[in-house]
Image (cartoon, rainbow, N blue to C red; front, side):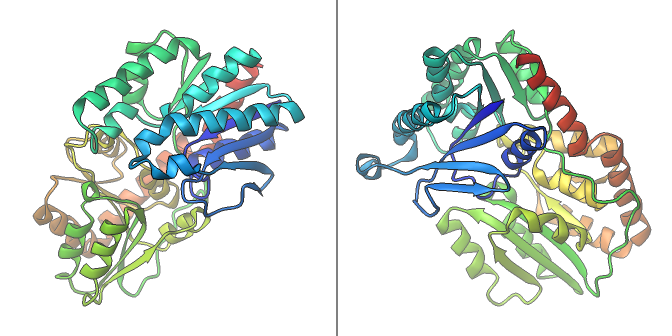
Length: 373
């Protein structure tokens, strides 16, 4: 099969899309990703591990628009044109749309070419934009998604809360493909750090408790904290300035996804603080949750979120309120209690081996594509 994926980022750091694409190539399919590179920082025609990449850049008109939300229709138009041009060289068998901001491309391709659509909903898009846009905009996208779903053939989503959400607004078959990671080993491995090492790699936003984490760490002795990831320039600069005179916190910026698992294995504790007031993220199981599990590392998560329910069920971390006092207490507890740290880490690895690994997700993904071939 010739599979076309549509993606609204430049496809340089998207573990879920990469894992799915690699799964398809291993199964003998050809995969091409049409990706939106807003800043024109990468090659237009590219390839990564057998995955073909066609990037779409902003036109002059798109550049003069003030916000990405206004650029979306034009990105979809450009992506659709690229897809039709690609189809002339090699007919597309199926289009796999990642998130609502690429789904219009798939809808138009289905109408034009008569090919099926798989809709891969990483999140509830209307909830995600509600952080930055007025409520009418968020409501519009919730309405738009609900009205486009009858035109798709299958829905893929990432966790149980999202599966439940989509089952209420659509009668389409919904497949759960979690963001699990490939198994690394089947026996628990202790760390060998001279100092207790804490890791956060992920999206850098104010809802992830990063400045507060820095405040907590600077007052704890014999601890080394590594913070990495990407975010808006102003917020990243704020983090850099905050740690200038703090010796036990290191900021490493963007981390290639192939380095995330090795860094997780070398750490003693993973931080995953999510603001429970964030409508989108409180129902999300982030990559960190699964990275920590396959590496056998304990995690700290926020009470009142789906990650807290998941962590409690698997007994793989500590659940705390969204405040600095409890975070400090939890870090010190795991730093000083090696037995508890290892118990939680072993539970995490056990759950990953049993169920939460990419090998299990691959089986479901390949089965789905066989059904709609």
